[in-house]
Length: 262
Image 1 (cartoon, one colour):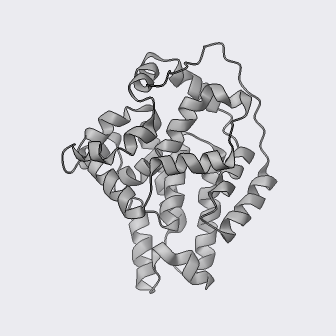
Image 2: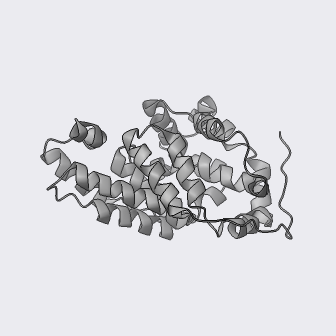
């Protein structure tokens, strides 16, 4: 088991600066190729969460945070052990997570590798907060499972809006609403409630405890519907309505941007 380095209370706060024009340039590149995850990391770099050091320090230096990290030193290792997760009861969050990841051809380690391909090393002033930042990154796909948002374009924007209310990084909100504008542009004339769906994602995230700060091992063992009830995650109504509107127009929500561009 790797050693866990805990953050000392006197850790100085790094200076973080917003560069919105840089974020917009990288968003335009992301629109050209939505699979180019590198652009997402650039956007977050340009729009840092200035409150992150304080939130990370509060968690990492707390008794609860220390206990969680000691029990879960590597979320990718835990989340990619599908054989172990499948031994948990049917209907659990673990089974839903495995079903989702296997259907999408994803792994938790794959997201880590994407991050590492962008930046082999974090800036020195962010290294002390790495355990906290890693948990935010590593729970992204678990949020899809807990919320019911798919990996379609709107589903991704809604998960980002949910994430903003959990950890208010401007990058989350910027991509969520800029992506919403692209969806409105792609399906001109549609009455799909895109922005209502994104705002609903924000509300759901605000009502939910910070998932990255919970024991993921305990969460995975819970029945999915019980976990959603405990976390206050209601079914996303406006997201489902947007899908119904688009399908009624003959548009596949999972291929909206590609098909409309064509």
